[in-house]
Length: 476
Ligand code: PHE
Image (tube, rainbow, N blue to C red):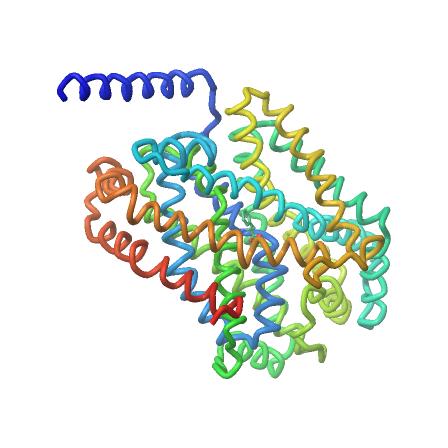
């Protein structure tokens, strides 16, 4: 018995050696400063989710009541999963798949699958995300030339339709986006991601503030209509599907449930206070969403539009709104520029998931890993890019490829990933590990926070996700 134990101990220690060796062989990047880590992570959270998705789904689902459900999901589901991911990534110092392998070493269950499905989700999200980002880049260029400016939504609609139904333009803009993010990613974690987001995120805050103030000072009647829409709840608008959409948005917004935060967490410093910093990131992200809402809804009402336009709200309604105001071209340029910054920061974190994996697992250089991933993305993404033209009639599950990628990722892959992350951290990783990571090995005296966190990840997050998923998908 004793001999057996010793040989088992030896086996484990040999395994550990192998892992440590592997660890030291790969020279890993990291964020250079504590502030840089927070800003880059915020750069992942803030994205098209805030400026394109949040306003249009809030518009479609009745405004304030939806906003409340969204905030509840963010607090009880999004934030706990975010803390879990950052903590595990920082502990294991590896890409998402290897991290899940390392943290679950002792218990022989395939928890690495969370990382693998996450890497897959990165492709699914980027497939449509790069396309929307492509439209945004196109609008930046066009608003420089004054091209999209017309107060007649029929004209802006035609402009948008011409763009999305042209296979050549759609593909070209998607490729331009892929090239831009690849270049930044190849520059590295600190020199690329950290540097780019440190410039983009503060600029974005200023720009969204400027546009929100402009929108709020257009017309007092419209301002109060816009504010009422965003802040005066009507709960009759809340259906099971709306709750599923709100939860999906909470995952998507905080970039959780698929390994992005595991990967970024692996670049965080050991002495950062994870619960506090992630909470700051969550609130800042919410603030950007609200500011985007304040930039959009009052202006939409001021010029007699409806907030329920759907995905094209940003591309058809908004240009018409800007064209109707003094100095519209300038504000439109600022607005699309800030959206381009937001989208770019988020895409960096998405593509980093497979890049870090290929880099560490197969010893591919960052450049090779990035180019390989981008080529794959260009292929998969083309099905989304062409979904309004060549592939318009290809509709698996009665959705275009674009809609399918969007639905699958936000409403299924991220929630299921987040569910298993919460279950793993709450029930399998155990109190000892959680305490060590969240208190920085006893340096922080935050027992109450840790107990609260464990209670929520164990009992609330998983139950909520399962209920919302099953009900939203119509299972009961
Ligand atoms: N959070 C990003 C946004 O709001 C999207 C994203 C999702 C990024 C998942 C990384 C991972 O646009």
